[in-house]
Image (cartoon, rainbow, N blue to C red):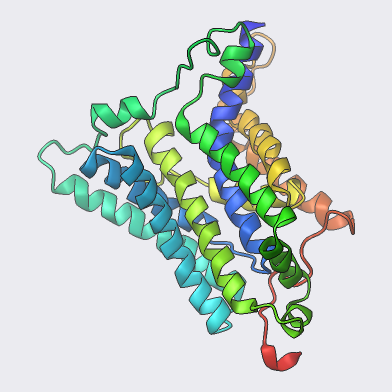
Length: 318
C-alpha cells in the first residue's frame, strides 16, 4: 500500500511541470494559435526562475522572473504570427531552438564567472520550495500524504488550471476567445477584438509555460543548475493538450498520468521485469506518439481542436 501511495505522490510531482506546459498551450490553441515553442518558453522560464531565485533569494521574485521570461518568449511568437502573419509552426520551432539556446548560454555564462563553478539555490529559497506541512491535514493517514504534502508549485498548478477553466468556460472574455479559435472572421464581424485577445492569451500562456520551466530547474534538479533542464517536457505538453481534449481540468489528470510514466522505472519490481531503464525513459515519448496517431485517426466533433488553430487570421479575407 505504501509503495502504491508513494507512486501516486511521485506521479503528481513528476506531472506538475507538464501541467504548466499543457495549460499554457491550451491558452494558445483556444485563441487559434498552435505554438510549438512550449519547450523554448519553458527553458527560458527555467533559466530566469533559477537565476532570479539564486540572485534574490526570494521565491516570489523567482516565480515572477520565470513568468516574465516565458511571456517574453511568447511575445516574440505573438508579434511574428499575429502581427506579421509568420508561419506558426516554423515560428514555434524557432522559438524552441532560441529559448533552449539562450537558457543554456546564460547558465554557462554564470557558471564560468563564479569562483565555485557551481550554481546552487540559497538555503532559504530551497526551504521555501520544499514540501508544505499543513497542521492537522498533512498527518492524516493516506489522505495527508496524497493531498496535503506537496511543494507550492503543485498547488499553484492546480489553482491555475481551475482559473483557466473558469476563464475559458464561464467568462465573456473566455467565450470570446473560444469564438476566435473557431472562427475569427465571424468573431471579428461580431465586434470582438480578435488580435487583442489573441495577444493576451498567447502572452498569458507563455508566462504559465515559464513557471513550468522554473519547476524543472528549481525542483527536479534539486536546486542545482543544469543545462537542458526541461528535457523534452515541452513537447510532451503539446501532445497532452490533445490527450486532455483542450480542457484545463482534464489536463490535471492527463499530466499526472504522464508523470506516472516518467517515474515508473523506480517502482517496477526488478524481480518481475528486467527491462532496461532506457525503455522506461522512452515510454512517455512512445505514449505521446500513440496519442497523436490515435487522435488524428479518431475524429470527434465534441473534443476536437479549435477550427482555426494553426491558421493565421487575415482580416481582409472575411
